[in-house]
Length: 382
Ligand code: GAF
Image 1: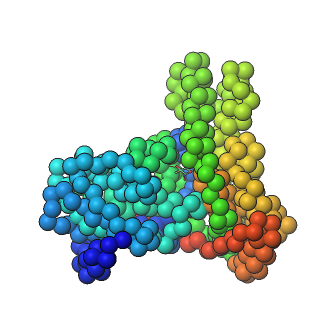
Image 2: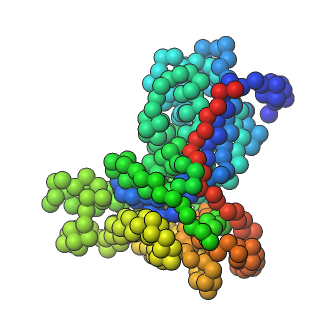
Image 3: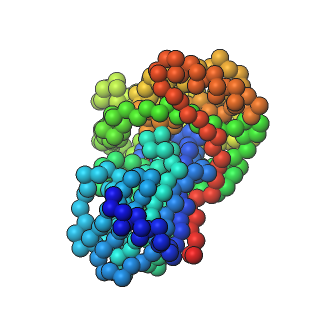
């Protein structure tokens, strides 16, 4: 990286600072792109953006120590980059510019506390933080909802992951101390107190990220869509798996493979688990909540097939520990973190024990941290 850039960005006087959080999801995996339910919230780890308009009509300069990167964008010709992470930035700039004539050159520093590939959605934090920051810097007046969908589009078109809206929604809309029960079909949402006392939400990072993640993610989405297309021949009001009942699936299962039946029945069951889990949380029935987390993992592992040996090991390990109420893989799968509810007095001992056994089995250091349900994106004019 050229030192003149580092020097410039060291003396930089930003106009806007944005803190954009990662997210956890208590339950409801692979349901969002099927227009189902999820129960996520933002966490207390963020990506920080510092932004300043420059004098140019077309030049944007992006600097990041975390990503060990400096690059420039020419607003008159934005195209997909070979450097994977740059595409999140390029995509946001492309989408904002195509929606607004008032978009000009800017300079930006990006620093992150979010581990990449951990399943806590550093990608949505990156897109959403930048989009909201630029929205404020250039007074583009896009609503938060518009930004959610713009960032999802960036992920589809620039990054190639055909994701749902959960991550962007959680990163932007979360409230401190709450989880969001989000209906991904209507975007109706309801905040629920995240009162897990005396349990803590602990993330255990396998520190593996299997390369299948992106391609398998997109193929799961296609599998679900194939089932919907088949069912639509008989039920014309069906738009997504959200509109399908278990009875409909069973009646029509001769029209698709057993594998597709497993995939789609998982989605239907997971949707129903989210609603039951939200009710359990409101009633303080935490043991029920924990059981639903285990059931979610079982479905993700056996029916949806998005888990991996490292995640399964962590979840299985917890079964012998009564201080763990629930444990499951979180996010897209094939690596990243498990999310666990662990009694606050036992967190340290439990984490020590699992790290030791995990290292013995896989030769990899697991990492752990307590996640606190936190406020969504915060923007300051400086
Ligand atoms: C990833 C995606 F980005 C989300 O949209 C969601 O589908 C999740 O995987 C699985 O629940 O985080």
